[in-house]
Length: 353
Ligand code: TXA
Ligand code: MG
Image (cartoon, rainbow, N blue to C red; front, side):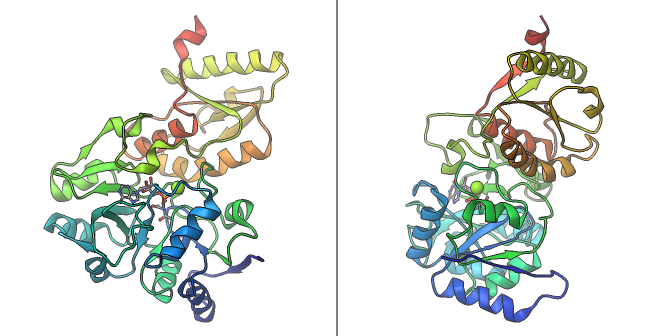
């Protein structure tokens, strides 16, 4: 299959191209498209074969459910039931936007799309291209991140091409995504609603609208128990090299990383550092990647996956990353970084002993 890449300008969208992409979805094909979080791999969510194809090209386990993307709030009622008033409130405030909510599903949604679950995850993205495509594609578009399972999510059309060239009908190239970290997932079937995946919409932001929400930290850790968001149990976003997160106060993290880089270089290894604006000048050795300023963690979120992919291309064997404070969007950044590291954390103090 030849994958067609079409560039679409968000501010003067070519309606013909959107219609063409929409027809591919309606006819059972796959189209990757930008959302404000990451690029998604779109298929018709109401067609079992769409889900099957999606799992196939991603190499994704079939028990890992897909998010159904909609373009109009009222469409939610066709695919979900027992929608609580608090969900309606959240939708009013955060949709369109990077919030996914989980509801009891209606029969219209095939079990193939939900990984066999009787619940369905629904999101209304903000990106204009995404909204236009969902509409053109029939209104219900399933879309996991458009990467091969286990690789970092794509924040550029080039990343999608790297992973899925020749496997899907079309890539809609809308340039770099806005945010770079996947949506917050909130389970609305439990009381209080529970965050299953942290994102740009933080617990504090949700609580301002509906009162208490739960963030089950256990779900963020590696565990053998059956996780509520099946995707969270898989190692993810993982670069090919061995990534470790160094923990301590920042000056100690820097000293520990300097020491680790020297040691690995002595062994003849290719080593990289994931640093920040504030520290990047402190690393004279190794390949040094800059996440951006600690004062602007949203920017750090936007750079993370691109940097993880670059480290693969540069065939780095060992990667040491600084930690980012776990507050606000920093919680989502560290959640992804920890998964990328396979939860390998090293205390700076022990390195410096
Ligand atoms: O920002 C996003 O959400 C992006 C863009 C493309 O919209 N999509 C995305 O999809 O991140 P994906 O498939 O890469 O991640 C979806 C996560 C998985 O961890 C999956 O297990 C969980 O959502 N999920 C989906 N449906 C669920 C359900 N019914 N119950 C629990 N977890 C669910
Ligand atoms: Mg994903």
